[in-house]
Image (cartoon, rainbow, N blue to C red; front, side, top):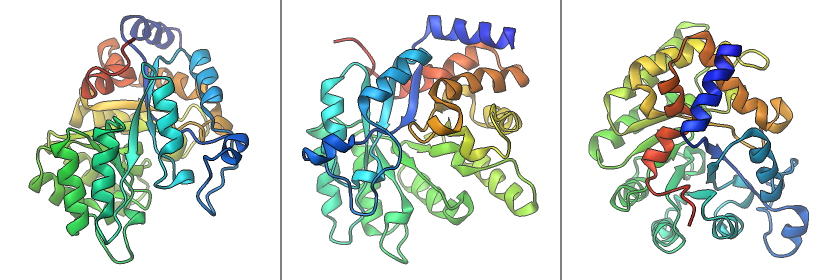
Amino acid sequence: MAASSQRDVSAASSCKVVDSHLHVWASPQQAKEGYSYFPGQEPTLRGDADFLLECMDEAGVDGALVVQPINHMFDHSLVSSVLKKYPSKFIGCCLANPADDGSGIKQLEHLIVQEKYRAVRFNPSLWPSGQKMTNEVGRSLFAKAGELGAPVGIMVMKGIGLYIQEIEELCRDYPETTIILDHMAFCKPPTNNEEDKAFSSFLSLSRFPQVYVKYSALFRISREAYPYEDTAQLLSRVISNYGANRIMWGSDFPFVVPECGYKGAKDAVSHVTGKISVSSSDLEWILGKTVSQLFQGAWVAP
């Protein structure tokens, strides 16, 4: 662990440490003051910006990409207020609205152009029943994101196997749109042929140069308790296929807090990478350099 910690300190000292995946939502008081929760999505965890900043300070994390949470659905006002208050600390990833009427396309353009969001999240579960991300609205959203220079983060919570054809189609048809696969495409260490096939299909997406990976929410992709050592071999194969310069660490705050604590989420990276002898240079890419290069000009003091 000493060597890992030393590498972690080295990476942190020469490069900003940036969390590529976390959420913020209103405190109960803020919810009463106008930042209301979406009905049925009231949070059970504390996730306000003040708490996040305390956690980041303790862990030595310099900045973050804030992903619009389902708790506020398509009302981005709370996240927008945080981005405006801390412009050198946070940039935003909005949530795509795939409504049949196409209203989400104008909303996406407004959020990126006017509100300065830098990325957009596709959650296939929000598409109308029976519809795919490759439907007309999905294609328009995806193309618009590429046109505006906003990477598309894709959350395949139900497994990459269900969506691999759609993702490949979008990659082929819109090579100018960057894709980021959240939480290692929810691939856990494979235990059977079906899981091995899903993991292989996830690795095969590395052939598209616009695809990046979040090594994030380790508690979601591990079969073990903290520090999630079984993700080491997954990460090793992802580095071999994608290269560290297409991989970025993310905590999944605040969901990670009751799992291992925010600082624990960051410390787990140096522990896991120590198991597979990741170079200090590659660790720098994973802890912040990749996401900083992808979002040029972010996390710079005004």
